[in-house]
Length: 242
Image 1 (cartoon, helix red, strand yellow):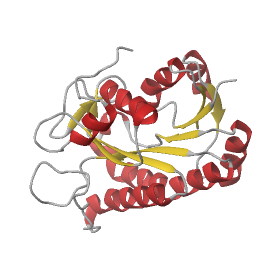
Image 2 (cartoon, rainbow, N blue to C red; image 1 turned 135 degrees about the vertical axis):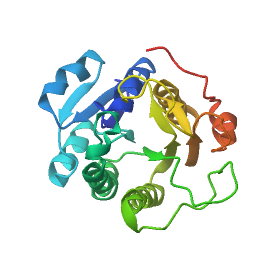
Image 3 (spheres, one colour; image 1 turned 30 degrees about the vertical axis):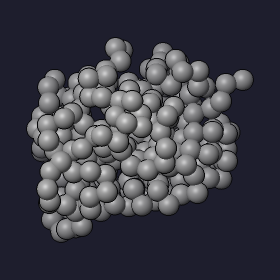
Image 4 (cartoon, rainbow, N blue to C red; image 1 turned 120 degrees about the vertical axis):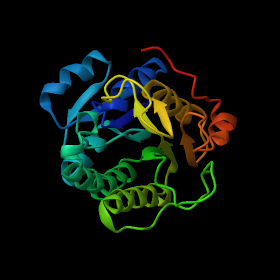
């Protein structure tokens, strides 16, 4: 029987693009969604769907205990289509809660289920001001006041929890996503990345990555992605056709 990979957020933008890559690599993929109507989509991708809310710690624990995954991939977000500005203030609060409380529940369930590896989505635009391009060991912005602070607190909590977990943990700091399912057809500012290139990086991180943090973005002078190129064999042009 194939080893199990638990994909939290399988019906999200990256989840839908990376799930087929995991399936093609031979993993038995169990994927979560909060929406029962999305279960059919996941089945079409080759994923065993589990309808569960990450904030329901007991149900999440049971879902991972049943799956018994070797690997857990955290791709959970709660953002409006196209990052609709009229809805972003409220969405930022929800997304920060996922990164904090949701990550706490997921890490605890992963450890209890006996998982050995954890990959998690983060962002590449949370660095403190400083010389460019930012490398992975540059400090993150800790100015938690104002609207941006909501996001920064969530990112800091997610990364701390993931990297301190008793697992082989990898954090992928994606650039701003564009492409299918993102609401953006082209790069929308500095530190951008096509969603399929981000998905490919995620698959490579699982196959080749060593624990730690990786910047994943196009080479526009904002983020240094040398580590991803060296360790993962990845480049921004390495888009796997879906």
